[in-house]
Length: 191
Length: 195
Image (cartoon, rainbow over all chains, first blue to last red; front, side, top):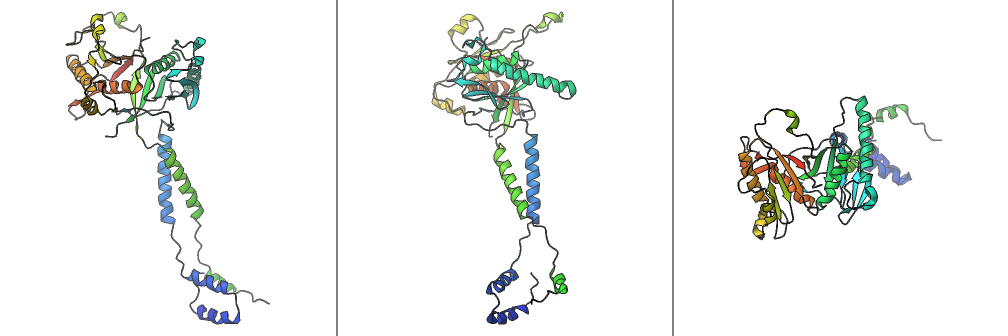
């Protein structure tokens, strides 16, 4: 199409008078001046960005989806997160692996989640069952794969306004489920 | 009857066709947009905390201990910080019950300028983190091998205050080590949940 002869143009002009469809003639004129954009270079760039993003996405152990009711505190720590069981304590709920296990009402753990439904209890029964099944899963994996031993590690993502009572109840319950090493996830100070 | 198009001219006009990359580019752009939106831009860090261990003291070791453990404890109340230790006598820190009843070791400060200087958005009676860092630095000089700190708080203390106290105990930004990093202090945090 690009190689339309220049000779054809005057010929077409004469033909126009004798009645060939004008549309066809117009199209060939436009096509004559068309320079298609070479998108191969752009394609290369996009592919590199895509590969980089996919790699950084998959290597991030704390794949945390930002939630409206979970704003973590800032800290000066320099340690980086590592892969572990994520346990989030937001303003309204406690989540293990992004699944809600118990509600928090007005800064207090819902008594219906606790042993004997008593507010004074430290043990959060629903959280204990969720962590216990997680431990069993990890121990099963460890039985087949010696590289992935069960370390009892939990990543705790707490909202900055939750009271200490809720934190200590969660830590106590996690300790009962044999998760004794805690890592508090915080936002690094923008310095 | 229409003339049959010449084969020769067809071959001449037949340029090597390029692969149409536009739909592929559309897909890649969409995937990049999705990944950019879902990936969190904020940088995360972690603070190591361990649960209290009971009954694992030095009783089984049999041998003589050179130094008893310091057992440094910081208790956070809504009035300030109370520092206590059992393994040593700290200057200006009285760990007796009477002293605890008197009030916190490092009380909250009422000066709004001091509160602003601590870079925490707290209203006038705020926690004296600078005072806490200085006090812990004094203790660290007396016990340079100690890295453990027991942390406890009243039930209504906010989680953010806990993190700030752990930051204050971990490193002293007023003093630098050989590699120009803040001086490390008590980074081994143990939660004593006041059970």
